[in-house]
Length: 433
Ligand code: PLP
Image 1 (cartoon, rainbow, N blue to C red):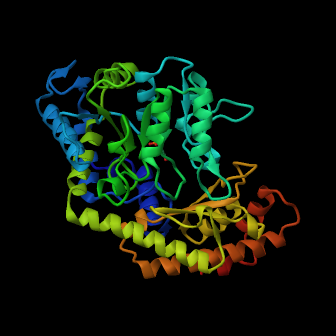
Image 2: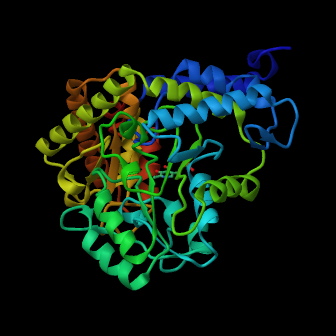
């Protein structure tokens, strides 16, 4: 039985290159992190070999004595991590990732064409919250359900709760979804609960981005107000790629969430759980209950404040003016710049972040902003002072991008990319230094 290097040097070489890229670059993608060696060892373990359709004690396959122990341990740790009373809350740890977790919730509590309201994607929401454009129903969520997004107040960059309330009263959704992929402020759960109650809707929070911060009580607790809470496990929570669904045990709106959600995950949408991921998640949740984890999450937020303050000092415009969490959203449009070009130049300088829509944007392919997150580099040990330097480097990258843009005759992104990736690009040395 040979190892990867002997069996498949081609894949081994690609992994080595990716490992070097991760090591070398400033990783600022807000949804990424570096999980621990203990989690990675578990994900790469014999747990991947086992089929275990069903739940602990109720499986469709033999040989699950230890897998049952593992999944029960993972469930207990998940509840403990978020300080939940197991008589009031349950959890399913089998969703393969965040989008499947959300779809399992919709499958559990909605009928086809029922109405939902989530934050619009161009305003920071996630695809799986019902994204559609004027021309196309993009996400499966908007294909199978009727979606009416709520949005930010563009003058403040904060969720427009008044408009959400007015729209909900007219649209009468069955589900309201809190949570976002590119929103630098916390959610007003009491207000959202009130709005949901006024129309008899379920309230779900997708805390994928901020679950690590919620675990460490650095942000408000969604469990106090929501009926269902979903999350990915690989962002600020710093675990393996996966998903979880937490649900209230008492019936909500006449629905037994526990059986509805468990049945929606399996057999509704998935087959065998990924036991290697569930094992990795159990290890992650052990980390998440430690004092070190809490200290780490506090640093994530402090580092983000430092980054935000420096960016503002340097003259950048931030959506909502700052950040309460782990990310900032920079609006580059006042500089006559877009996120796609800046992402490209920074990538060449081994600074990894992503272009992002900002409120009022016209194009998703060439959006006006960039999203910058602090979880990954905080794991790598960067401090508040270091994030001042990160902001300065981003400023330099934006300046180079502006100079490069002037060198291109056309306005198309393709022309720009062709120039900056060609050997003749005159600013290459500056980018690489
Ligand atoms: N929910 C939110 C808020 C997200 O930001 C994301 C991913 O970025 C997801 C769900 C989807 O997670 P996954 O990519 O694991 O399907």
